[in-house]
Amino acid sequence: MLRRNSSRSFAEMNHIPDIGLYVMVWFGKQEMWCRGQIIRICQMSRGPNSRDHTDIKVEVRRIDYGDVVCVSLWDVKELCGETASIPVQALQVSLVNVRPVNGETWSFEAISWFRSKVQSKILYARLYPEEGEVLVELFMEKGKIGAMRRGDSLSVRLAQNGFAIHECNKPSALKRSDIPEKNRQQSLQWEKYLISCYSQNKK
Image (cartoon, rainbow, N blue to C red):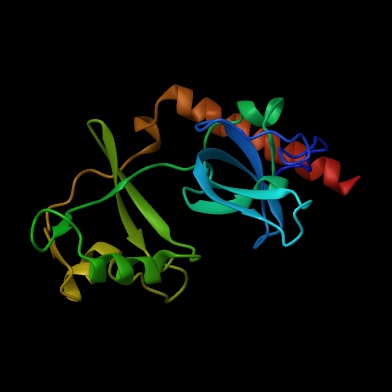
């Protein structure tokens, strides 16, 4: 959770942020402030009284989570200071060794099935570095804890449910030595930031 921002919202400043601007957004479901990027204006409405202010809602991509939310400008503030310098935590990846049944695009049914398995869930990933992208194998179970065994990956389950074609050959898993030094330094910076936030909340 990011520390509460005391600055005024864009609605209070009577200002519409530019598309592409990085901002702080209040995420009501989890009751916390998150970093985001403005994608587009998704709604404009005025209250029943002609003197009421127009309520403008913007679509925001939460850059540390990867999802998209539509929020009022009353819940959007400027992103500045040390919060802006924290490395982005979300990573765009592709599922490993799996492709759509028709070989081109994912069907609506496949997307709906996949969304039902991952939305608001904790998943466990095995990463594979490739040129220009990162492939990922996603699991719903953490793995070997006592007698517990990890089940099939979501890639395999997609194929088992008839939504994909799965290939068995596996690339090399991502090792710590494969991670660039810059990324390791960013991870350390993020850990230090979290520790500082925890320490201030304990006071």
